[in-house]
Image (cartoon, rainbow, N blue to C red; front, top):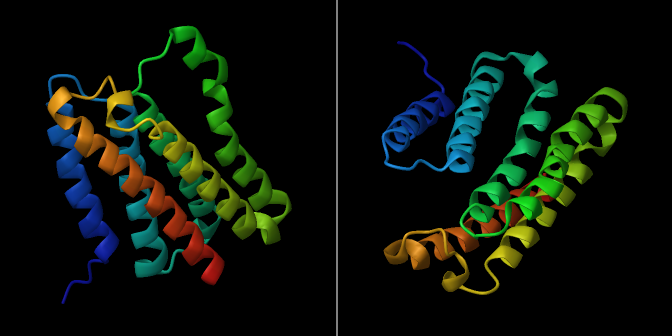
Length: 169
């Protein structure tokens, strides 16, 4: 019988979602990047744990640390701000993967602690974006603002839960 790791099935479902999103009228690039990174992470997890490719343990923390900034960027794209504000600090969101790469190479013992700080920090930042409620998400469709706000809160909670499981393990 053929063995197909569950993360490969998840990656396939996410790929279907990505293709559907690409055919939308105005696809959100940060959310497309988020789905793409989730696909990559699912494939890497399937290879690592399904087929025992232990070398991927060095890549997985770097990929995982890229998820919170992209979640933040996705919800940040639903709030209208001037282009100058957006461009001035956008590059800072590349810091978590760069930091994680440095930790993988030079201080692997600090990876778990850094991952917890990154996930909780971005969860708080995402919650701060939604602090003003659904009305602040002015770039979301009018009929989808409440759902987008709910998704924002759920995403922040998911980041916190992920950090909690990292702490528990």
